[in-house]
Length: 362
Ligand SMILES: *Cc1c(COP(=O)(O)O)cnc(C)c1O
Image: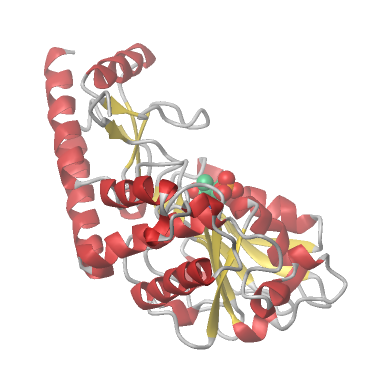
């Protein structure tokens, strides 16, 4: 490589750990000493079927996925799930409950409204999505087929790390930007989905973990590529799956295992969040967090500086220190630090050191 790797705080596609990338580099030319590259390997080959099985197995083990649930690999990103979920699961009454915590959940609601009725039962729109509604107080609609929420709000920087008890109603969660970042109980969910490009691998594959009895409900009238049942029956290979993306996810999961699994990863993420948020709070007149403290995300940290000029200067000087991808989303502005699993504590230490120096000189 001609240049050293920089600290990449991009919201997604995001930084990947070095070890999987190095393994992939070799596999591009020659996968597992087959004399054929991974990109050139048939999805029906024994080698690739092995990759699928291993990747699924690793996910199952890391997330402790019970036998009641199936792991699927889809395409079309989390955005296609916004439509597939209502198409498959809204049932005869064509009604579901939604929580609106900004941008992605708003999109999920809009997509659901094309299929039926999406009741917004809780929302933080009144305060520009700077906090999380308490979901334990919500009474869900009687005729709702499921409850949909987003765990980590990538753009606003809020995160639910605990989940409501929705009783008999299947809880469905978009975990695109925090899956594998901490431990949680998969058995409590009807369906979990996540685009890989934040915490699991490259863009191109979406992991769906669905309760088997729910997948059975897919209407037979849906296009085959949009039916969960089809993915279950064909082991996510009705058509050619995104082989390379699945392979990369497998390598990232292997790396996660070697780190010590979710318990170790959760600890490191807590340490990273603690360091960054305490640095902000010690200078809260300068680094102004944009969301309610109790609802802060451990994955995407959002802040404003005293002026837009200072924010511009911050981004320019950060880049000179090899701290990249820190610009906030246009709907929030300011600075956003995305620190998924592959961002090490050292990366946050480098950032915090820069923040302190920047403030001193401002
Ligand atoms: C990035 C993101 C999405 C969009 O994912 P695509 O794979 O681009 O469709 C959806 N939800 C959340 C929470 C995200 O962070």
